[in-house]
Amino acid sequence: MFENQLRRVALLSLALFLFAQRVVAQQTPAVASSPNGSPSPTPPVFSPQTLSELKRLQHAALDSDHAYRQVAHLANNIGPRLSGSAQAAKAVEYVAGELKALGCEIQLEKVMVPHWVRGEETAAVVQFDLKSMPRERVAGKIVLFNYPFDKQMAAEGRSFQAYDEAVVYRSDGPSAAARQGAVACLIRSVGSADYRLPHTGLTDYAAD
Image (cartoon, rainbow, N blue to C red; front, top):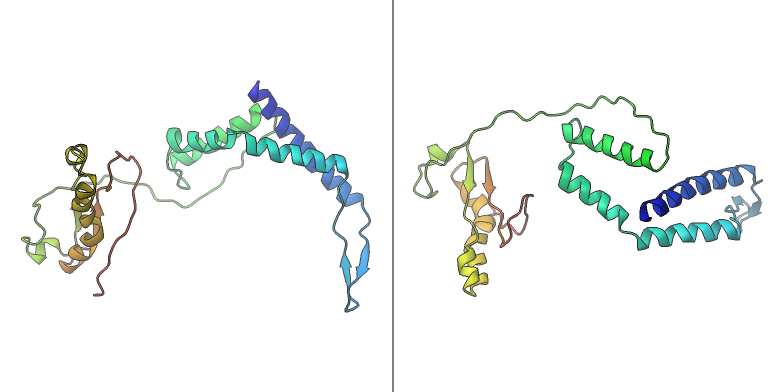
């Protein structure tokens, strides 16, 4: 039943848009004189019925979670959608299918987009103590900080201590790696949840 209501709202929105365009096109713009003598156009006036229908559309959008569920589907089921990626193409097909289900006439156009294709990557943890590693083994490399949030400590009621011990790698790690000549660093997400997506937070960069 909800989907049928949504379809009617979408088609009504399109019809109102076309109707409003026609009304504006047929209206003869009235010209009023401004204090400096230059003409200023009078904004188009919509009928009470049109305004009432627009208000209905506004309430329907605010009361429905349809838009949220669509975004959730794109984020959780399709994933990152960089231009030129397979996920981007899949997202286009999904949106086109949803619009067709609402009765819209859809025509997809071929678009050429320069894009980057991920190749094969490899990494190896050779030593854990950054300070004990000679600079020549770090310079020009990417440093990995893979210190996890201690869930056992958190379960014992010491969540703040567990966070403090993990967050130091994010706050001070980049500067420590840079002092050893690293070109970048990769930091494990800091927090008690298991995140699939990147996690950000405060990082203190040294002045040098």
